[in-house]
Amino acid sequence: MVHVTKIYLPDKEKYKSYVDKIYESGWLTNNGPLVQELEKRLEEYLGVKNLLCVSNGTSAIQLAYRLLELEGEVVTTPFSFVSTTSSIAAEGLTPVFADIDPESYNIDPQNIESAITEKTSAIAPCHVFGNACEIDKIDEIADKHHLKVIYDASHAFDVKYKDKHILNYGDISAISFHATKIFHTIEGAAIVIKDDALYEKAKIVRSYGVDGPDSVGMLGINAKMNEFEAAMGLCMLDEETIIHEQRKASREYYVKQLKDYIQMQKKNEDATQSYTYFPIVFRSEEEMDKVRSALLEKDIAPRQYFYPSLDTLSYVEKRRIMPISRDISSRILVIPMHSGVEPTVSKIVVETLEKLRR
Image 1 (spheres, rainbow, N blue to C red):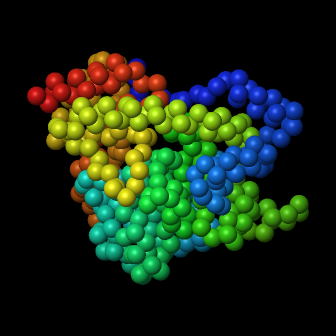
Image 2: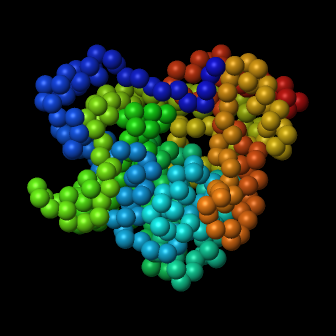
Image 3: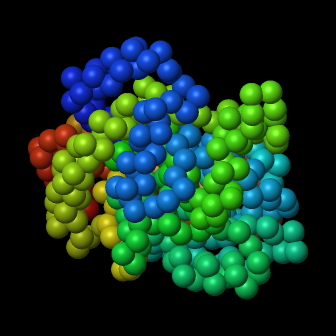
């Protein structure tokens, strides 16, 4: 079965050489030398500062809220992976949804202001499928209402906005390094923090709040990346150009073949493309189900991603229905686009879609 994502594994011998170093040092976790090396290399590769590696993407976002000491409500998108919302709720905050743009699938800035109340402390947009949000408009709203901005950039490893890497924007940006991502550390993630003092605080909060040999200075969590994960990340960085080009070729083939009769995500013209996922939206939920069934019969497993719309979750306040998010989530499929996808698979996907749309 061919799935939407496939884990890329870098050179085995190079990874083993890092494992040998881990065995020699006996240093497995607690901010080891490979984690420190990965953080430095990522800062150089991405053109950012104050990057801190953590255990996973959800921890990264929760750490951001804890560092900023937020209270009350956070305006966020209903169209994302569940952790975008659950991380808000887990920190004792109230997620308040603003509906999405029907073409970009990102939170619509026009809907943000109407969701802001006297209890709002932050805006938490997501660069959905790596497509850059309308960052300038969101910053303008945040400045007007004195709000913090935390970007969920989980899918945006390979994205620049106005010639700077997208992680440079917001008070804090969080990115996932899960095994299915274009760059991964098996599990793992990172946060990029604008404020230098907050970055120093993050190092302490990431490790239980321990600020000395016999001192716990603040409330913290355990969000540390281990050395084996950092070793994988170092290997992945060495092969990132290969991964990028393979995914780019796959995306360009789909665009060329499908652009005339399938709704595709409208990309932000001020940002570079992401090659993380390839979503397509159908005319109806019935048509989507028909295509999914046809592809499954050919051992190709697309995914209805993201579903459900997060405003339907049982543990969030039901203030307003998000009609656009619910509509898009009911008609969307993500099709295979990853390193190693055989051209024959892409061709089968295209032929199946063409046949069913005639």
